[in-house]
Image (cartoon, rainbow, N blue to C red; front, side, top):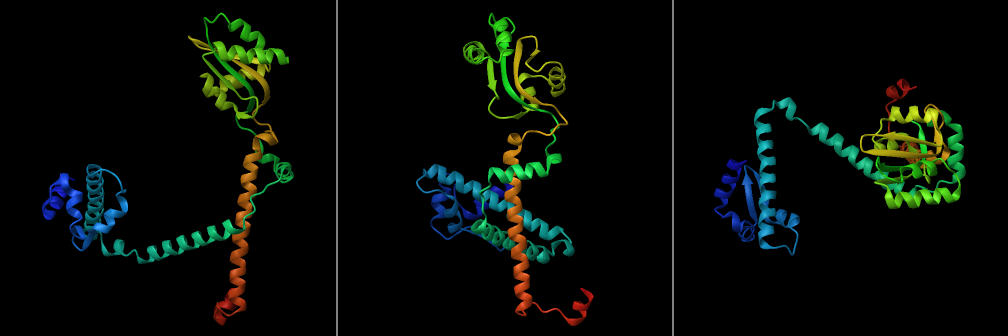
Length: 290
């Protein structure tokens, strides 16, 4: 890289500290073989209003990047066999795919209905129950991490096993005031693995604890005790709740609508071409296609 830099700097006969200022005196900034970097190319990447020092630094970085790319291309042209350098077909295929992709996106964006009703989500859920069987188990509840020496630990254990409104409020207040960490998942289902990572336990350890107890469980290490209040739990191998899958189902329905729009577009374009003789298939090939 240093050799590249020296060649460029020497060829331009400029000092790096005034690199960008000197470039403004001419249209050509750097050249490697027939490849030329122009002042206008630099102007596109150098933000306006920055200091001359920052401008020089950005200009130098861009030149080195450009030079490296051109030198690598030059080396590839020299070293690769002719068959490996014949990329015209690949480029044309890539251009075709890119333009078609952009057109399909534009077509879909102008026509896609992104409104998905609760009824549509429920109907899809009921029709595809097997797709929503949980692997790890899903959980609603609260995790309170407290020091093993905390004087409030026994109180927290008692509150975690209660479902009385007053005790739930007291648990939250105590957690905010004396817990090392308080994570609550009572409003939305989460994968049990999320809770395992928060507590420092393994997924298997929490699953085993939940097999024995469904009010509150504990996971303890040498410093902290994790008191986990279980408000609801769906074990592995069971269909997870609609609420847990609602957003995923919404995305599936919208994705299907996108595919339907594209399929209809492709069909209509093909039919139009056949009906208006834009597409002509030779008689022999037409027979072979049937």
